[in-house]
Image (cartoon, rainbow, N blue to C red):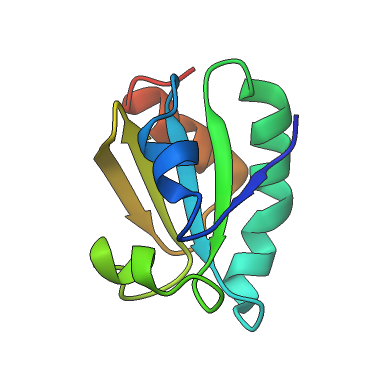
Length: 108
């Protein structure tokens, strides 16, 4: 399973009401670091898809959700569990660092 696109409209159903943790990547088309981490997020989605959903939210197409959660820079990754944001990282990082962060956050 690959990453899932979410929007302002689908955020509540896809993320907040999800039965498993959801890693949300806030990104934009013009963001170089966002494009750098995209392949790593696809691999994580494929490898850890049983434990976590990896969702991508384009901040330009869906500006309400990022402003609600105080996203100031991208890429910003937020981990949601049971409808609550439980962890956040800002900036690009290698795949293993993302996996380590997920493990530290109780995923995986």
